[in-house]
Length: 88
Image (cartoon, rainbow, N blue to C red; front, side, top):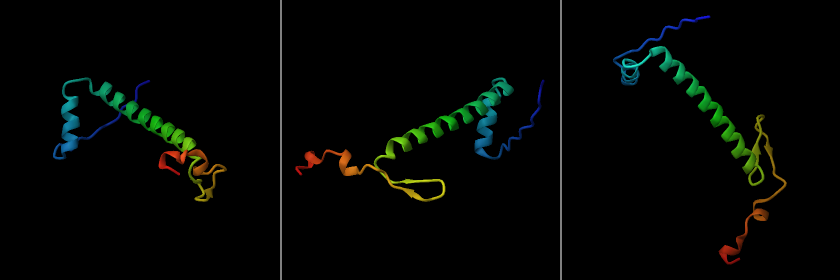
């Protein structure tokens, strides 16, 4: 099955012109397909990274949940950090 998509480039806009010039020398379909897949793959990777960071930090800082309530951690920051380096 083949689906057709129309793409418009406004060559008076520098970002559009740059994209169009890249497409001049290669398969337009393959370039667009690769760009779309890379864009969404990167978004998924960023979302997974943010989730991992939030999970790691959840023991150190309060976490704001989706309903904007604050979920306090069972551990406190002072329990996790060795303050001896400060001379205390």
